[in-house]
Image 1 (tube, rainbow, N blue to C red):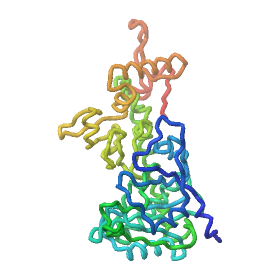
Image 2 (cartoon, rainbow, N blue to C red):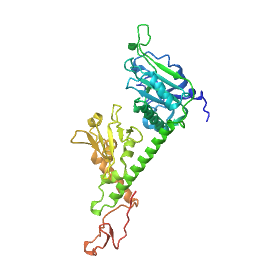
Image 3 (spheres, rainbow, N blue to C red):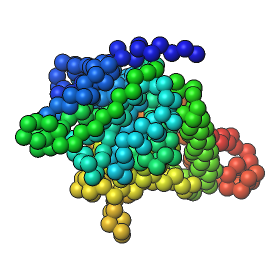
Length: 389
């Protein structure tokens, strides 16, 4: 398949004046910049403090809410793959060789050192254009495949760059890292002209396929675990029927609740998440999917300060889906949260939904001898309904 060499240069991404540039509460969209303009300016890094340096979101979505990760996941369109290399003091020649091996020598790319890089501690950013912009779900998988192939070449990328709204600072060497005449003490870059990325080319295509298969297998496993858990709970004897909290957790899978309240998953297959309360870029919340009930644990200081969930004997926070509902939906008021789900449950019953309940004759004197067809589960001479998701 022939891919047009120059078309990618006109693709645009959202441009921010600096990392603090936010349009929250505004109706003004962000500016944009073309990939061609970014590549052409690589030899002219700006000379401002890091906090004043221009940045991009690698997506063309530019509305005032462009920095909201959930919005970018839904509406973002991503025309480049990107990597951030902050560890390993990797030489430029090793990066160039890795990019050529992963994408092919005919593919266009831009590599430049970051504002905090030095000759003894090299740090880099890599841009590789795509033939056509991708929706987030496909772009995320391509990013993770790219990262995996970099690791195979002995290069450790920062995986936070697979997040939907992550900022990327453009080429900049601050004044403190320049000589008296204004020239950079250290700055390196490499521009390769050529074609955009072909996602069907090996080894990238194989890496993407393996990630897709792993995601499918993990999702099937999670679905099976949820089904087994729901069935186990549904088949409890009447004396062990759900409490309101158990019912809430059964009806609201933990991973769905995490996403509902703005948690960010490290990557598609990960059990590690980033709390919306966190101020760091770490993924300090871990999900545990267990047959007897899903729960989460958090090592985040921000979660601890907010008293999210409960405190374990090891000093970290933990809880279930209902604990998240209490905190984020009811500002920590557990009684209000319980009243809320009880009210919703009552409405469900009033509208004719079938709810499991024990056998309760109105007059004990009229109770006939019980004839169990299935011990403490199906009673002879009655209408019995077993339900499960």
